[in-house]
Image 1 (tube, rainbow over the protein chains, first blue to last red):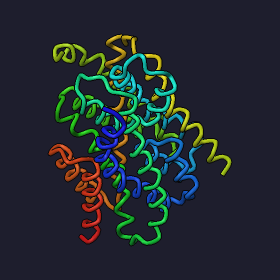
Image 2 (tube, rainbow over the protein chains, first blue to last red):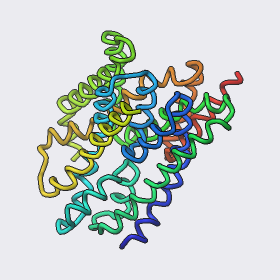
Image 3 (cartoon, rainbow over the protein chains, first blue to last red):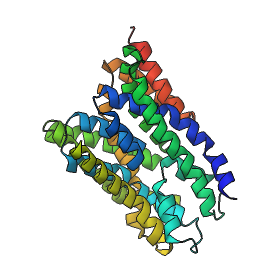
Image 4 (cartoon, each protein chain N blue to C red):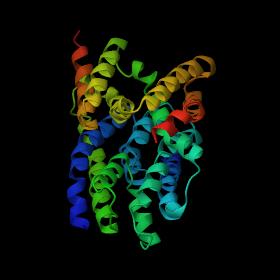
Length: 234
Length: 99
């Protein structure tokens, strides 16, 4: 199980990233971001949800620290994925290889490399094969989107504002349908966010912090109120 | 352009570190269960807060947003992949422009 097998496993991710990356490039352009900013984010950050959200944050002229903190909060979910995935790699695999592979950990590459090989250890070559092609598709797809924005009709472009939310729904709903606990926490957090916005919203610059507050509070409530249910499930 | 490069560099660092540090350090460490539980809920709660109430203002009017929320939710539960759900959401809002 080497590089070739990894590349084959990455194919559905690559196909999935093409329209998302183009939508990201188009959205970025329509929000007034430069091609430089859009593509550099894909090259350096490489995190779909955070990049989609940061388009709005950049366009709203939010201060840098708030954009960076929001990015960190969104991408801190990679802590869990990275922790989980590292168990699948032999401890003999060196630090340099781990540093390279870990840059490419996304929801999709994590899922493919975790679920596709249940119980078995994976090789560094396989993981590099899984993470490198989607990265290239994401970067070049973003660039393509910045060119296409001039050719796509306004009515279609207007409709693409929903893309980010549709992606979040696609990520969230399968987990909700599998777990009542997650469903409860998600609903509680949504209510908290609406309530917190009602009480604390102070222009667009304050809203990133409210999102963090709602998310952390929701997770705390889930941790302490649903702990026993969670342990029963195990 | 300089400010943007600075922000993006910051984003890159805070995105890379959570990916990289556990991958290198935590292979043999057991996380306390409560902390593990809390961290495992964070992505769901963040996604929830990202969707609500923002989705209601993501298109020209609330009815098209609600329609997209409904169709995307059903598609996601039925197992449609994220890309399919995204295209369905765009299509839903696109069609609703003409009502």
